[in-house]
Length: 296
Image 1 (tube, helix red, strand yellow):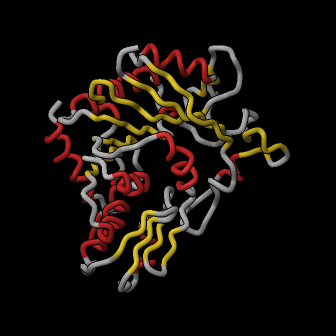
Image 2 (cartoon, rainbow, N blue to C red):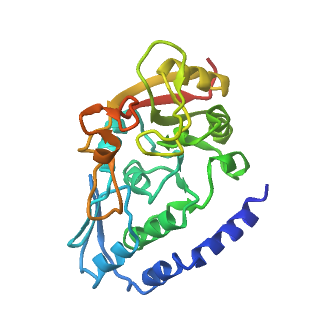
């Protein structure tokens, strides 16, 4: 696979009729010098540009965040700071080559800059999310590399990584072991993966396979117990499986705001019993694990 040819081909996506006007809006932004704060909200301070909120709203929906651009607060559907702060104590990225698979608009990548990694690369084949990233990065002016590529391209990428984050992607794949193998191939020797995925309670080595949707999400294929997830990871070649955290997704973390379109978690749960999804499955819970490639 020729990654450079793929890059060139996917760059054409930026000319799609729904994306091109957004790219033009970014190109019209004037330049300047601003200060950046990497807190719970990625915050830009300084002399404000006109029509920032109008430009940001052109790029809806904003799934990950929040961001504060001068006086404009982009209140994203996910308060991604909750997940980031939960995981923060479990990693140190100083001088490491780091990838974020399914990076969305780059919120986590922007936050990771505080560790001074050697390299930050985001992978996400979405021209809208890439455009949101470029909009924010107009002000942040980071060296983050954003690739319109997916996890399946990791093994062909020119760089191997010390740490790969893969947060909220595995359950979207019909071949989870195959995806885990792709993550494995993207690591340098003794590298690590920080992974999160939906899980169900239980000691058995089994998984839920939703009939048509899970929490109103159609492309959810498998929701394993932690023991089943461990088996997947070992079959993919990882020598180390460590549970870091577990959490029940709450309406404090994921909710409807004026910056998205459509429904959110409150609409995905049974209105009479929020321990269940509207389909009758267990409500979304996440497990966060560390996987290592090195020797056992």
